[in-house]
Amino acid sequence: MLDHDARLDAVFRALSEPARRAIVLRLSRGSASVSELAEPLSMSLAAVVQHVQALEQSGLVTTHKTGRVRTCMLDPQAIGLAESWLSQRRLQWEGHFDRLGAVLAEDTNPASERKS
Amino acid sequence: MLDHDARLDAVFRALSEPARRAIVLRLSRGSASVSELAEPLSMSLAAVVQHVQALEQSGLVTTHKTGRVRTCMLDPQAIGLAESWLSQRRLQWEGHFDRLGAVLAEDTNPASERKS
Image (cartoon, rainbow over all chains, first blue to last red; front, top):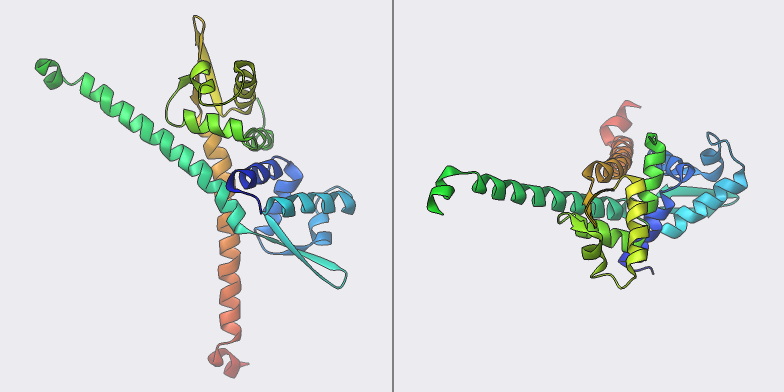
């Protein structure tokens, strides 16, 4: 089991490749077999299998095999993990600028100038 | 100028490294010099400079130099780009499951059974 930081490493690394993002995009519309994933991508089935394995290791995708068909599903928890890390950074940044704005407004406020 | 896909590649790749995420986290609280960024990280200044350069190339960080001090700032647009890609995937996935749920509810509804 990967810890939180290692999971973020793996999720962000998995998403840094366009073919893997195309697979995640397809799976966000519903589960699909490896062959179905390969169809719109101009690459060999073996290459798609490798990308699916990388996505599986990152936790973004789970798979199960029935007979000869491997079905892939998106795990929204892994998406949520990365999304939440990013939204926290954005909110922190916005909060910082709100505070900075308040300080600047205070500094240019004639009332506060009179007090000093 | 990188296109949308290349920017996402670069942003996700930049965020797949814990030290770079630590730098982004620090900068989400306000701008900082390279030395200030290096302080809490147990690595050489040269290594921090390399991470800052990678973050700059990805568009997550902008820097400017005044005298000998390079100040780094977070660019929230790049954070928003990745955040928005992830939230779209999550919403698509949730939408898919809502539709699936509606179809299953329709199938098990006695009223619809009577009609068929």
